[in-house]
Length: 357
Image 1 (cartoon, helix red, strand yellow):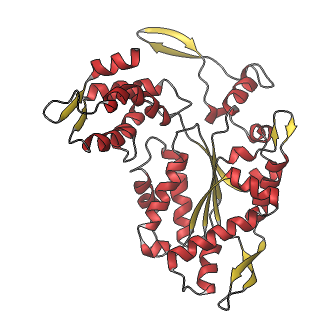
Image 2 (cartoon, one colour):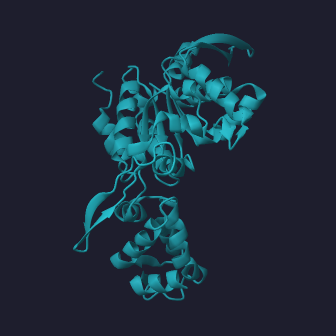
Image 3 (spheres, rainbow, N blue to C red):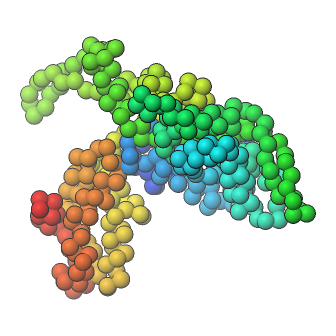
């Protein structure tokens, strides 16, 4: 590793300022990014986690980390693309080319319009591609083949399989030129919620092919000892479950690491609610400040909102916005009405009343 390349710990620390409670995913991504920025090979990473668990936030944090350091920005271009866009491009027969052009344009933004062809292609060849909602290009939906999804997987596979691909680039004379790009150095991070996967795996180990595998354990709750069955997707997910879901074996084999993100608990949601710069609370604070009002939530009120959001595990951090909206909507309609001396204090009683109504 070169002396100027960030360590995995440096990258993880930067990510964890925006992402809470997903240490395994953060560590895996940090190692992969550190290797890439060092010019070393790194396996592709697949993130699986419920909506709102932080998959996209992880890569936004990486993007911010790289962009903040000009020396790092010169080494690699990072682009984020929604899988549905790849599916649309696959339908037109151009998804691989589209990805390379995105990296090319991002490289040009980073190093300027006067960059040499060699400099641009170097950054494209060592780029980082984040594909969000990768589960949207599954090969099957129910019992029906999803042709567009199949094409999108095949096109991505072509870019990921260390092949030399053609790329049209502009020339100084105003025309275009076809060059061949070695894609072995591109790092792919894909992420998806894979809705229904949890239930499918649970059915497999309880009533399906592997029924009886999930054994009850003895637990103690409130001084009482009893047997309970605890299921974790992390413990029971197998490659065949992803094949059954619609990810082809050839496509899945291009990912060295499959990392599961956990449902966010009450403590993690509270940290997001209070600490994330784009949380619903900070958005509301900005709104009230326009009227000269300081919005303040008591610790008990904030905790109650996080606890209520945690009761909707499939929504993750997005549940915070829905819960807080129920609390804050009437206050925002009449911003100055309940403020006292320029302060609007919301306590647990007000939160309880709003959530019970």
